[in-house]
Image 1 (cartoon, rainbow, N blue to C red):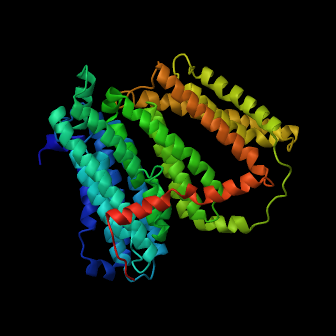
Image 2: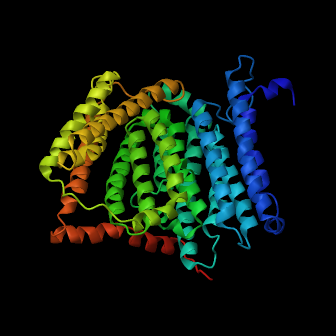
Image 3: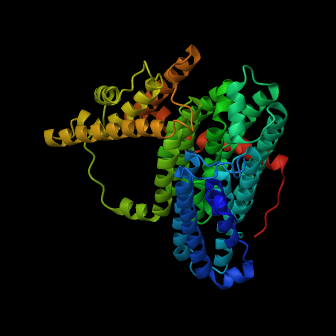
Length: 522
């Protein structure tokens, strides 16, 4: 290996997933004899990923690097360089947690073997520079994720859910394979950079590229567990907790990552992104309401993941790719912590609850929404973000207004004194300021890798933005005002319907077993 090859960031990025996968090549018999050693090997491999990542960052910044090596195979851009260390950190944390969580299990060593292969496949998908390698990497990931989901193979429910997820994964893989073939014929390239260049240069996309854009959106919807294909995402809780954390905090974002990689093609096509907005918005609203009705901690977290993924895909569909990436990073860290600390929530719920101080009415809600709007849109203006230069603020400003109103609601209900009110307002201002600081910072940092936030919008896009804003305002009103009217019969009936996820998973599950029948044994 020559010195110039070592100066190529693509080489270091490719070595990161390959060395992780090497840990999984240990035979199951040997792995089960040394479970602690396998766990430490997974953690050490994750640490080595971070070493390779630092080498890639250093060589990418070096003027004497060799950027042409492995071009089209590995994507050495800022999106890769920010997601890779996140995934490596999640693997290290999940590996360390599993050492204690699965201590004494006869198959613990095999678990770490499958974890290494799953993580290696997903890391390869993160660094992949073309759509075919991305598909093959996710095929490896889903294959060994199936093993992790059925780790407790004696549980019939775990086998059933893994079977359902595998069918959706294979359907998504078929969509991506078809998109790859179409892109090869339509644009003559499979590399993400090549697809972006062809999409920008084309005055009109060939029909193959147009169809491939819709197939990519279908892949994102299926892989992200969006409505009405969300059932498997909610039911994979039979797996060990670290597997749930890895899935919900990392692997489930493969659809969003692919949208980021192919965003130039999707922008050139246009209509497919509208579908992404609508599916994401419907999922976010339904999941937000269903989450409130759940009695199991993991079920509530699963609905939360579905809703956040819907929100993320909605952002991507609106062309807010930079903000979608910001959402991916922050939610991944939160969700991993939420799953791995789920046991402590039980202790918190056992603690005596503070007495209720009254229920907010419509007037209090309107007051806090008005206050939140002043803070959100005022802070946006301070950072130079206005509806004139970023039309998306129509939706984003309302969403931040709703979040601010949630913080201010105790004040609007007259439940706090003047000193606490001042602290609440100060906290809300700080949160809004931090958001727009990240908003501007990410827009600047990823200006070369991702299309900037749109500075203009068509009539159709304005209608979508208004629809999103209205949906989040309605959701806030329902969650803060209507939900407290527990004496209403219609509200009790609605509670039951949302607790059962509007019953949409039952026909989907029946369809799954018609398409792919299976028998399960203990």
